[in-house]
Length: 222
Length: 386
Ligand SMILES: Nc1ncnc2c1ncn2[C@@H]1O[C@H](COP(=O)(O)OP(=O)(O)O)[C@@H](O)[C@H]1O
Ligand SMILES: [Mg+2]
Image (cartoon, rainbow over all chains, first blue to last red; front, side, top):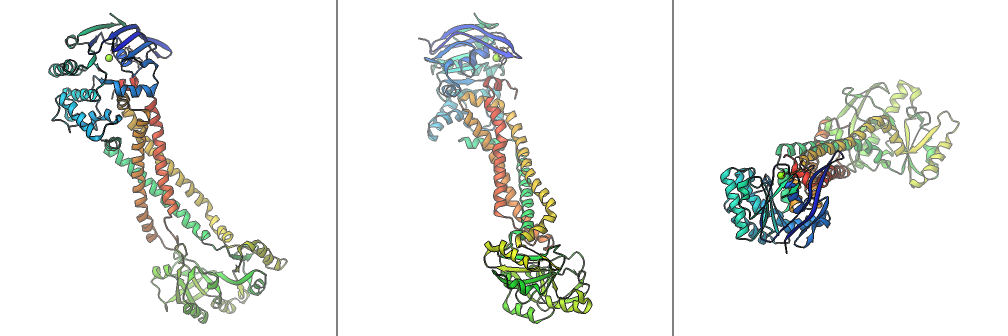
């Protein structure tokens, strides 16, 4: 049985009462422990598809089931709770809170849990250790390099031990060396910690790291 | 870490902006406090009026005098306990700018009717026994450095001539709101002067002050007094002291209303200052709010984040404003001539109102940006270039 099941989904946006069809009738499955690469040219709908799976947007048609929950049926607040438990999101531009230290940024999603202060500290330290930033705990985002910022963002995404880790062009803003490190880290999270990962990229070398690759073009999957 | 820490750190993100907002609110709160204090001091004369005192004046206008003979007649009206009288003397002391109330009063019982004027029996007796004796308020004594035994030369205007009074007593106000800027002198001094200079004006008083035992009887007693003098050459109009005082205050009513209105406009300004900051702040953070929502934070979290920051800024501004209002009101009270505002106290109610306005502004200023942050879709927020 697959962990994520995408069934016949379509997604349209409306601008000035004009329909923009972004995704048409897409279906696929992701098994637990998979590392899926989603490729495609810019504007093909990769981010949109990822957002639907992560539950931050809703499909116009079709259903998405993640570990037997049909998330297209959840309302806003149920969805928020569901995301906090099941999804770790890594953005292209890191999206860390500039006023918070690395530690506090990683701690942020744990504020929604029932963990004690001490337990939170342990989780945060562990996550930062995994991403190799145990020595940058009290640095602010602007005191870190792009690669380090992205590693903090990954720590923030995994600290809740989510069901699925989704990454939208995680190396898109990084130089070659840093990009390589981030990809190695994701690979390690997949092999060593058995994380299910969906990664959007248009970089073929990034896609090589994934076990499976799907191509999206003009809203259709091939 | 706690969500409070994030609120605090957010507030310190643009230190200059937050500082200026806090300062703007503080100054506005201070201006509000000051204006309310001006209004309440202006009204304090009215509020200090006693319910058991009636004032009888000439029916045409209080500037016309009444015959002294009315005193005994009024005293016989059932319900009346005591009758005293006074004349508005005015005159010029030192120069025209030294304005404070100067009355010729009935030395026999004026003080019996004004328990808020606290003066020793010895001093009262001295005024009774000395033709040109006067008793002055403590504030006047301080301002002009007057002691018992000092002479006060007054150039008469309503009552022309040179008058010389001698200070035989200094009174204190019973309450904080009591006026300590009166000069009260023996009415017989005025009357004897008039007998010589213009005998036609002698034997007359400006108004009567009537002590009634039961304030509930005021309407009946007022009517009874005025009935005594109907169809006489000097008909009377009897009112409560409060109504009488109000007729003075209402002369400056338009200014008072203007200050009143402006003081509430200031609350609007507080709101605008803060709203401007909060709208700007929230717009810059649309993307961060989208990220927080992605992490699973709910609408109520965003509302407390934005509302908390707004309330934090407004309460710091409000507290600072209230804190600076105290020294500023007492500073102003020291600087302006005491007779302008015999009483100039920052009332608790004003402080409460000022602080509450700042807090209310904090809530209202957050409402619009918080609504927008909640309603913005995550995907739209994330697409914002920030
Ligand atoms: N929130 C939105 N509102 C309107 N149009 C959108 C929105 N998000 C994406 N689109 C449109 O959908 C198309 C696909 O966008 P996206 O999923 O971001 O593509 P990709 O990530 O593959 O570059 C684009 O044409 C984009 O303009
Ligand atoms: Mg994209």
